[in-house]
Amino acid sequence: MLTISAKVDQYDADAENDNVLHSERYYGEVQRSITLPSDTVSDQAEAKYENGILTLTIPKADAQTTRKVTVN
Image (cartoon, rainbow, N blue to C red; front, side, top):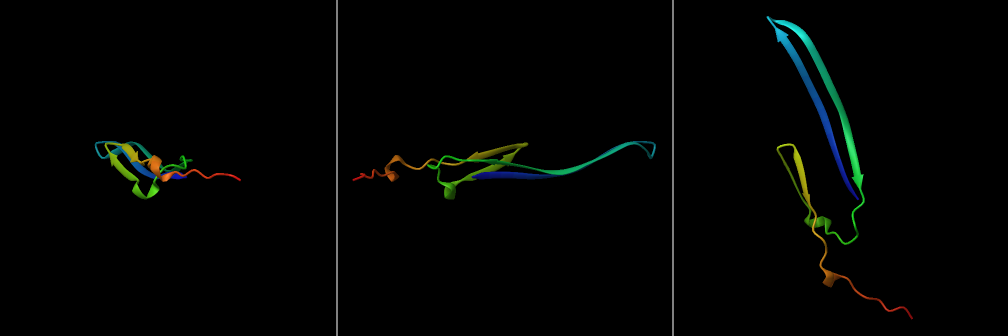
């Protein structure tokens, strides 16, 4: 399971001649959870946040790590 959460706290104001014409505050939290395939290697996961874009790299396990089990 991959969970991504973010917290936002923003304040914007427009002023003219030391008089505030408009001010706005925004705050909150968001969260998303995604179920990952079982053949991913979470120990080798990498995350990068650049220019407002979150990039996640989660490698898949090698095909050699799977094994076949015979049922009697």
